[in-house]
Amino acid sequence: MNEADFKNAKANARKIGVVVRRSTRKNKKLDIFNRKGMKIASIGDSRYSDFHSYKRTKGIEFAKKRQTLYRIRHAKNIKVVGSAGYYANAILWT
Image 1 (cartoon, helix red, strand yellow):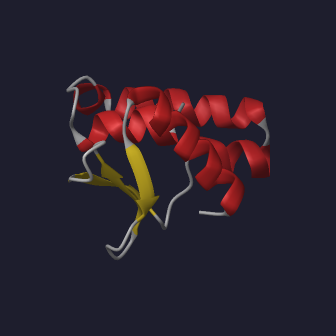
Image 2 (spheres, rainbow, N blue to C red; image 1 turned 120 degrees about the vertical axis):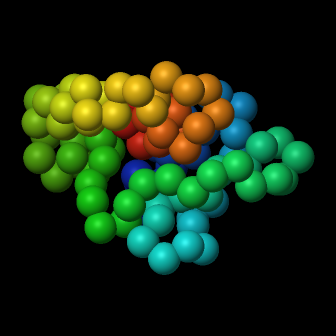
């Protein structure tokens, strides 16, 4: 995850009231923390792209198609507020 994508992720995280840091876990992009500093989840596989990286490398139309497919594929996980899927959708795919 490059610096521009990380800034986008931080901005999205602020909107939903959490803090993100680069992950310490192997093959994860971000660690999610609540405002008190307690770790909530690790999200995003570093071996795969997300909305911001697709938008930067392949354009907005391609990124929107991938976003739609991601949301279809993970529909049941992104609905559960507080789950890793919810945070991945809200931070990496918005």
